[in-house]
Length: 111
Image 1 (cartoon, rainbow, N blue to C red):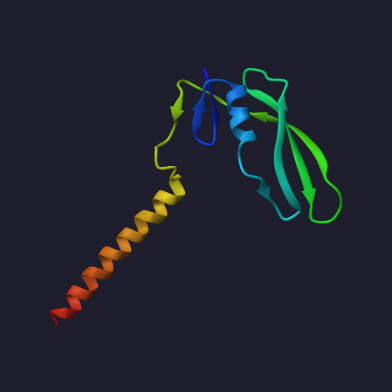
Image 2 (cartoon, rainbow, N blue to C red):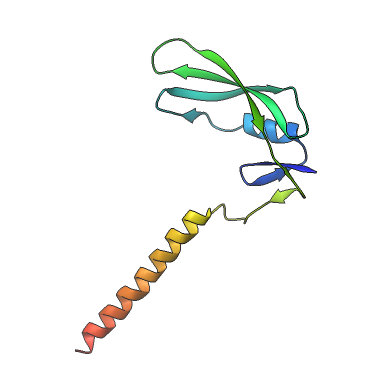
């Protein structure tokens, strides 16, 4: 079995956790979370430690149990573009608006 992280299934939980450790820091309204260390692996989870740097105050370590769901095979699960369903819907509406605009311009030319 493989484990899912960011739409890609990795060989195991430790590989998925190592991939998360290599990701960029996450900025929030309270401060910055940087992946620091992972350990205590199970079939679907790892204890992930982050360095939290608040906007005001000193750094602190935050450990959470991170779940990496199991999947059937290694590789991308949805598509190779990285588009979510919301992105696809938004793009579809943009294409539809372009066609409607082109049709409207064509109608105005023949009047």
